Length: 220
Ligand SMILES: Nc1ncnc2c1ncn2[C@@H]1O[C@H](COP(=O)(O)OP(=O)(O)O)[C@@H](O)[C@H]1O
Ligand SMILES: [Mg+2]
Image (cartoon, rainbow, N blue to C red; front, side, top):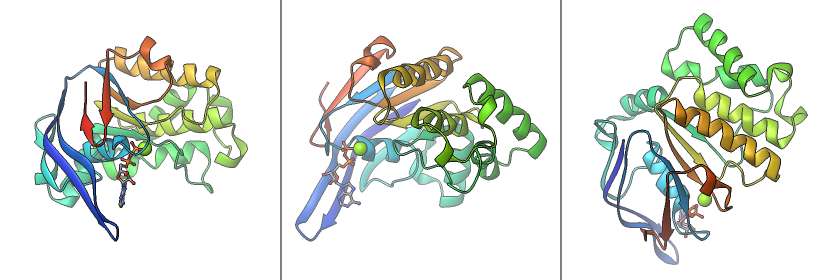
């Protein structure tokens, strides 16, 4: 499903080069649930953004499905991403002036999903995630757990094959963290591939495999 071949990402900074990814080789099979771990600054977010088509590596090749992601032009890559990849950010990245339903429907635009179908799907997903009674709330009027579930709903709208989540439970209490994992597992059991960056041990109960990183490298 995802394949990293000798992937490096180097940031030139005033203090010199930062090697955020350093020759990463990794294969994640379709249908796997993978937890990605490692100390702060080791390159986890860089990995996820690169796998999600949002950050071009300095060298190497990233394949998602049958596509060599960065061989696609920007517009093609955006379309591929919208149709195949859901992304959940640690800080939610919900649009503050839109309500829950419209935040979720935003995802329909780049994928070209028809409005009526998108609306029907969004309502179904939000209901499953327990946000049925919160459709017209804005993010500021939600609990943090509800915000993250809204962000997950948005990531699921286009029925992606791959869900990438960057510390989605980093700001949540244990009960809400469990709930997020339960929803990820539901996606996984329906055939989806999940890669989640996480620090806690909760992931051990849900993931098929833990991948550890250190200083821009995969170490086991
Ligand atoms: N835009 C950037 N410019 C320069 N350095 C960056 C940039 N983004 C990330 N880095 C550096 O790359 C390394 C890996 O960052 P990141 O992938 O965010 O790590 P993690 O998510 O594991 O904490 C860090 O040393 C970070 O400071
Ligand atoms: Mg990070």
